[in-house]
Length: 347
Image (cartoon, rainbow, N blue to C red; front, side, top):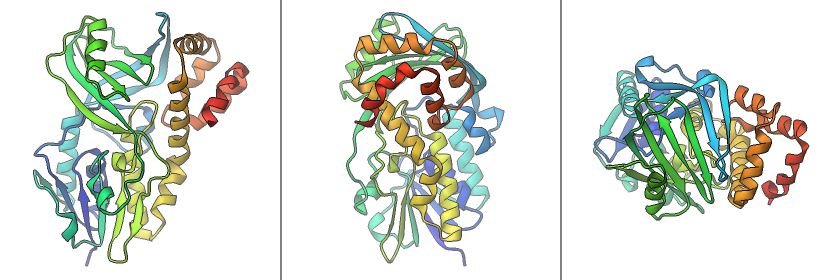
């Protein structure tokens, strides 16, 4: 008889895990909301291609250019060799739920799960930044949060993702098409005025907006625990497996879902397994975030000028930002002056 797995959380990480596990386990998913929705732009780099095939019907847009602005109104522009995909996030989640159900999983939307009375051998916490599963099993640890806010607006654009770094976060505009875009901010500040000021500075009126906590990655958070009676796993935002530079976590959730299946089937150490694949990358994103948080406007202006120089842009345009270990050392070798930021990275 197949072992029972309860997945708490029916968002991206939970439904990706359900699809991985449903062929080999008795899977039940519980999502307390009738329809899960996260404040997220749904951008995927080409790193996804080795992990999952996504039907074109779930792709909102494809964008190959990103423009990062500096405080002194200069910018650096990257043209990726392989475009980013902008997901139709809600439709993709519905597709994942349907796929999991076809494989035999039971997906319960609008139902809160009683963790204290769980009868499954495996419990997977995929319930977001404030994970109740992590809290219940004393796996929450120390967490720092960003506040993510966004809105969909009418906005004429040239199909380029635009980013404005600022102290303690950044703002973005991600086109859905030539006339509509998502505008958002991610900031340590919980003041909703951050988003409003960002919109006002660009003469954008956002009639409806959403907000959600985004965890800063903490490599010390436990993502597996054996209670003797049950095995507990944390994935996605519940595990703080989030890129600290951008707040993105879809590729990371894909890796963790695949690692979860391998761990359960072959009795492998879950913590060690997923960290061997992306642990170093998340650590590097965290260190890069520390550098950015320490920057003055003058530092940011200088960095944008240096990155604009030939030899650096080409590396960033070729490699996926999900895996900074593939390009950071090469960048430092090509531009030794950037070594001045390394002490901040190691602080």
